[in-house]
Length: 292
Image 1 (tube, rainbow, N blue to C red):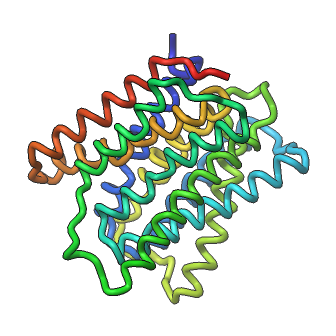
Image 2 (image 1 turned 90 degrees about the horizontal axis):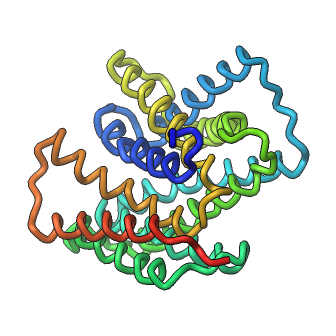
């Protein structure tokens, strides 16, 4: 079964693509808000150009426009909160808090969509989070005096990202288009406008002087955001929210592996076991059908 027709494969492929995001961000010499802006702006422009060439129309109804607008607000907030959470509590705890989205997605599935997770999935969720904790760890020496703010921002990151995923799910009312290119394009451009204003109020310039940085941001916007975002969004209405939440734990897990491969990051036995636990939890979840 090919990638286009297999929603579960699209979900995991998208998670793999966005797992490269921290690598791209670490390679460019720009402010996080600026890199986030170019991520969504470049991705949105490329997708829009494709749609214009393909003569696709943006004929959404009011409900879809509303949920795309909400998705853009939540995604921009997710990026804003996460970067500041990392500043206060460090990348380890910041990553762990952001990925509490897995619990929110599971609860959303139960309360909003009547998707009851299986016993295996109920086991997989906390098991995967334990594995993630073993990977990212927590260096208490990184905590700043006002780390409580960082913890709040981290949890808000999880809430905003979950809300973004749910909003994108609600925006896909048409069953005609398997791949939601139009929805992701519009959402991306909306987020870029929000981040442009954010950069302005933060007194950050959007000018990137380094050609190498532009090239990296181009790959970042097209690969991780545009293609990765489309793959994930296309699976939202066809995969249970619990499995989506667990599958997206691939991002921090694979990001850890990319650091080892590309930047010669040292790793411990505990971290290695954590990777195995997360991957096994994802495997368990993907091999069980959600009860509804």
